[in-house]
Length: 277
Ligand code: 2NE
Image 1 (tube, rainbow, N blue to C red):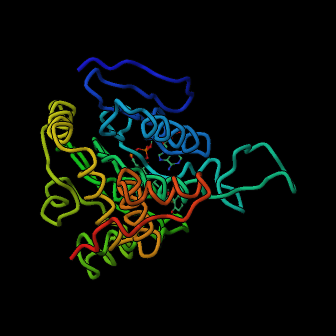
Image 2 (cartoon, protein in one colour):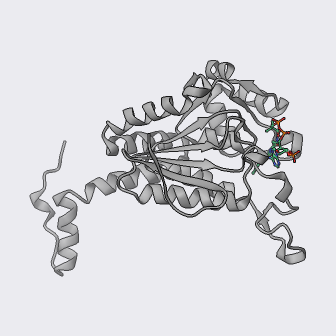
Image 3 (cartoon, helix red, strand yellow):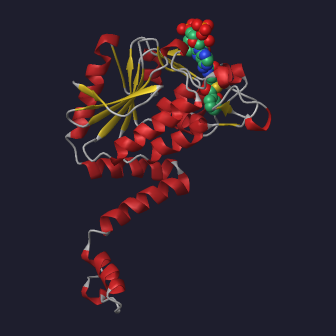
């Protein structure tokens, strides 16, 4: 694959292949790709760029280097009110938050498949990021786990619910309540990931999976994702599936009659459309 860099970023790289794969790489290997607010703002920006790019069909999320996918929130910028955009600020200016909350939702709503390509550690908030991806391809050196209760934190949203859906509630509680690490083979056995390959084949295999998806109907893939979300994400998931249906309906003459009648200031004539069985 030839990756062409796009965008100007500090904490990440955003690259696009010639055949429509976008790759977002968290580039902070010195802290095992821990994310600070800036990192997540940039990942979010790159995801939006990939979403808007009609040539992009599938998105890879990964971390720089063989040692880590992502080690979660950067504990060095963790303040008393959340993670701090400006760790030098004090008093009322030291306003923290969880930028990752919005990023997780964005990943779930992104209407293109998002694939986690995991080498090394996917732990803490980094583990939740892989959970929020649609598929996970792991290298044989990958290690998975939650660390929250060890550092005084947790992610009981997607981090609990998606994990329980994937591996069962008892096992998910074990992951969270013991903070153990699980190697790639164990993660595969648990149903936490899709496949394991030797580290040196990680990108090749991930790109192969991406290309298989690129050959499929993009809108069908979008509906597959929103169908899973409809079940898993409650009203927000149903909203996505409903809006996808509406998006399709806009291409239908029946919907266009409503729009045209409004514009032409006349009564719509829906009588000409069949009441389908
Ligand atoms: C990732 C792990 C297991 C790697 O261990 P190892 O032995 O390979 O590396 P080491 O020496 O621990 O880490 C290398 C450098 O990266 C920094 C370390 O402090 C170390 O720095 P130096 O000593 O070289 O200066 N580093 C690694 N992870 C970091 C992090 N998250 N923040 C800041 N610096 C980090 C091991 O490093 C590890 O367990 N890391 C911590 C994982 C963790 O607890 N993450 C936070 C969970 S809470 C969270 O993510 C969260 C949430 O729960 C809710 C909302 C938002 C976020």
